[in-house]
Length: 413
Image (cartoon, rainbow, N blue to C red; front, side, top):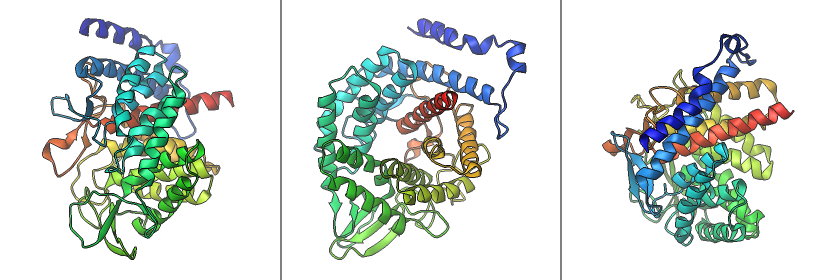
């Protein structure tokens, strides 16, 4: 299989190997100074290699009841069952691969791993059902006509009903059960929940309870009010009194300190606010996303890869935060009418994607399953630092898909 895979890769990469001098001399330059044709060629090469990685991963994992979480230093996935919050990202990556390639094999594999997740619709112990069901069943409804659409829809609605039960009227937020500190009578809420609001928004528009969309709107507005500091940085966790709704404490579970900014959590918030704008067209959310984005960008390394914590003296790169942020920026820039702002955000996602498609972040050995290296899954766990993560691959592939879609739209217009 490895020899066959190598042959396929050579065929896929042939256009990049035999570029003529005429083609190089006709490079198209974008307004922001980026060599657009060269960048597009780099995107196409990254797509070809990413597809090969995923083909390898299917052969290595074999069992569609097992899901990658993060990889070890040898670039082999650690696998877990469907109960893990990360379970949706691998089938989601297969759906992204199907959209990028049109290759039916990726659809077949995506369906196998997606349908295994159906047993999670009643998991009332998780605030992360949006990750599991919108990356999988949600993508399937958008990307495929070769599924039982009604069954997939009902699965999403059932998961949304479970998530909606977590809404706490006294605090106006969807709760988490995740906390590593004990505070009396506390309801914890984490920034990650912003990424799960789309499950409620989609469901409210597709046969679910209309009040679920109101839960999402209230949650997003209160998250910005309570989590975001005046300078645009953010907390990861806010704890509320269960009875009064008053704030007990603000801090972090995964960043360097209670007054720093965990980069992935901040990227979750940017992305979530962009989703809120997509569904509501309320400019409040778009303005929130821009404020949060400006802070994120002000703390990026020159190559566009964020550190694990935006405010820490520990300079540990985390590609996951930048991949999430790049995907959000591609969508957000399409909503911005002011030319200067749009160019600023467009240039930034070009820089981030260019880095992610290059060494030392992009894994060129396609016999390995993961695509992107140097993520931080949990900083407190040594084996989960500076390794691939399933969510990094997912948002990288989504960003490539969104970039290609933008290119097609601009060509048509």
